[in-house]
Length: 123
Image 1 (tube, rainbow, N blue to C red):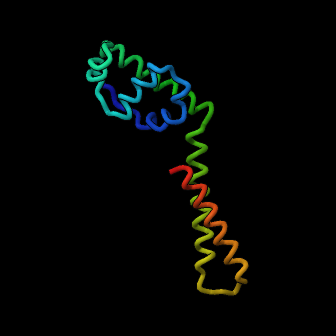
Image 2: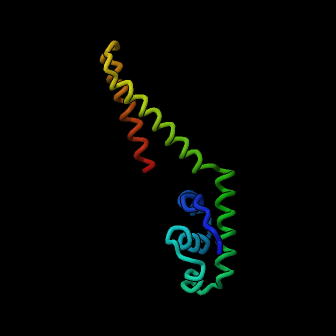
Image 3: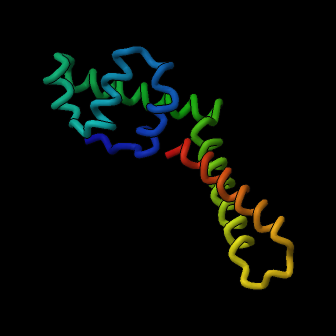
């Protein structure tokens, strides 16, 4: 039995267009639809071993694309950065000690809103 690499499913979203239609379809059935190799083989008319080999090749390709291009990593880093920015802006805007001007509050709220808007793009 082949164990699933859970990193692969999101990589299909990023790099699926770089695969052949057959590779993409088999990988989606395996990773996104959670079908077994035997179920995919029966559904597609390919041998179980053929499905296994194709999925392993596709997995290797997707991991190599991510290693070289890094879209998933960069997206995760961007989300982390935007989350931190939003949290810091919220902390500034909710300070109970108003020793700063209302302009600081207004700007921190704007930063929080902008960070939130960008984060929603990744949801």
